[in-house]
Image (cartoon, rainbow over all chains, first blue to last red):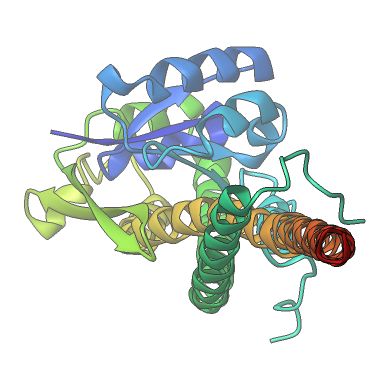
Length: 107
Length: 218
């Protein structure tokens, strides 16, 4: 049975423990990157991996590697310092990639 | 700039190229339709994704605030202790969905345990803010899962649209013009040969006629 994983610094992700996510804490970006890599490999069975924005921005290679595959979905969530706009920026970049211009911005 | 392909100017090649041109035109039309429809779906998904993300980020901010308040009065160890053994767990069911022949994931989750089970700690050592935080977090699980699904779909669809767009452009601006000029050049070459042949025949005929006249006279 599959579960949801959550990677981030201790303060940002501890709450997710209580609701049954599998939480993996990391102190540095490289540590987080290693963890995400391990979780994303197919046998560990985490179709959804939430990563805090601080770490998400630090591992573009890993994100890129899994962006073409249907599973796992590596999704950024705001950490304890609030949203840095990573998610919004990602959507913007994707829209530009697909359409050539970010025309959905003002809807 | 359309370039003429290196092929022999024969009728055989001409009919082959004509078939290829017809296929290319048809493929171009189909891919263009596919691209248009994908863009339509994509924009809907992007809109949904934006809304969901805004919602999730706002909610998570509230959760973090509650946690901060909780950690102001409770020691980090106490918080950790309260949260580390959840009674509730989430099971995730993954499936796939098909949007314009792009396979996107579909997540269904189910929670085990009763609703009150999210508070898997004693109320003596914890403060009310922690309950608020955990409760709020538990409420946005469905949003988080949906966000993951939508965002992944958007990613996959975006790269597929890009690929399709490139194919459409390659057909429209390279393949089809190249085929057209090549066909034109072959047709011209064949016509030229034909004209050359006719002149030659006429010449031969004249010569034969002249010979016949001379022969008749002799």
